[in-house]
Length: 156
Image 1 (cartoon, helix red, strand yellow):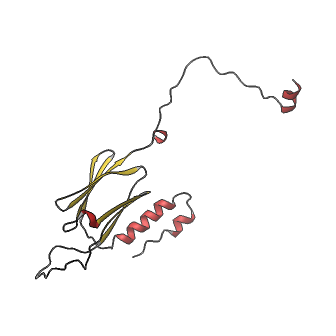
Image 2 (image 1 turned 135 degrees about the vertical axis):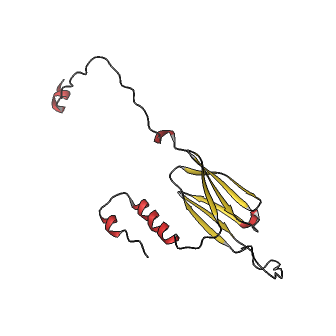
Image 3 (image 1 turned 180 degrees about the vertical axis):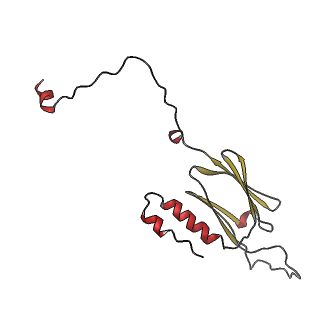
């Protein structure tokens, strides 16, 4: 099933990123679910992604953070000393996982330990983007400003 948001795109302005996100999510919903992962909210502005990458070394995993996208890829070298397995139960294939990130979410730390890749994310809203409380002053009422014509201002 393909998600078609064309009718909504025609009547909205500035929501292109949201529609792209919905369409991408719908396409990837049918994609393979390897490797398994957990998403965790640690605090209001802190998150953690834990990916099960058993059998991968640190050199075989690449994490790329772009604007609003986190890409985690694992590449196995198929040629390097292939053992003669009788049974393969641990998935050892290459993978690529994409995570859409909200604005101002950045990778703070990434660790590989005991077959789990742990990526800590933090949301840091710039000071200029944070809501501000405006103080209301009291005092004398404002006086009306008279409109001065350009010609009269030059003559004076």
